[in-house]
Structure formats: structure tokens, C-alpha cells
Length: 164
Image 1: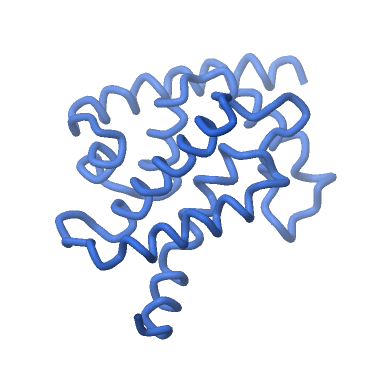
Image 2 (image 1 turned 90 degrees about the vertical axis):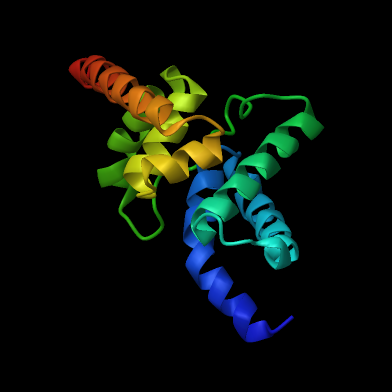
């Protein structure tokens, strides 16, 4: 395959794939798992039929890869003490650590499907239809889940920041 095409796919998809994995995989393994996911996406790129956006299609592959990552380790979450990193590179940790820890604590208290719908709809900017495709649910279920996720996040955030 054309290396220019690989570079274009990489530039478009890497940020979303990396963010998705960074929230779900221990920080020490984020780069390796991201590289594996990008390799899977590249290998599968010939089968991309265009029925969804490229980003939606890639995130679906990434979600399956992360699930396989934990299945191989017979775990469902990151081990204690190996939480995924949430502080973006280049920011001052003294300013961002308290908020990042609070966000991590709030997300840890939400069901995985609510964290995923917040990430896909609000962070990645996918439509309800695209999110439904990645999560294998209906667009109506996505809207309902997002509504509950926002309520639960808001409630948990208020409790988390009230204690600070």
C-alpha cells in the first residue's frame, strides 16, 4: 500500500484512537496498544466500505482491540496504581492534576457505556448515528444513554468537587 495514504490515515485517525485508548489502558502500555490498534486499522483499511465515517469505523476496530487486550489479560479494568493518564502532554501538572484526578474519579464511578457515550458524542464529536454504530445500539439508545450519563456525571462531579 501507498506510504502517503498510510500517513494521511495516521494523521486523521491517530488522535482519536490514542484518546480512546489512553482513557482505558494503563499509561505504561498506551503507546504499544495504540500502535497495535493503528496496525489493525491499516490492515483492515482495504475493507473499509464507506458505510460510515472513517473515524467511526476506526473507533469500532479500536474498541474491539481494547476489549481483546483485557480479554488476553483476563481483566476488565486497569489495575490499581496503573490508571490511564489523563493529563495532556505539555500542560502544567500542578495546575491540572487536581481536576484530572477529579475527572478520573467521576469517570471511574460511571458505567463503561456512559463513559464511552460521553467520549464519542462530546469529546470525539461523533453523531448519534455514528456513536450507535460503534457501540452497537440504536441512535435513540445513544441519546437516552447520553442524557443519563450527563446527569450522572454532573451529580458525581458535584459530590467530587464539594469535598475539595
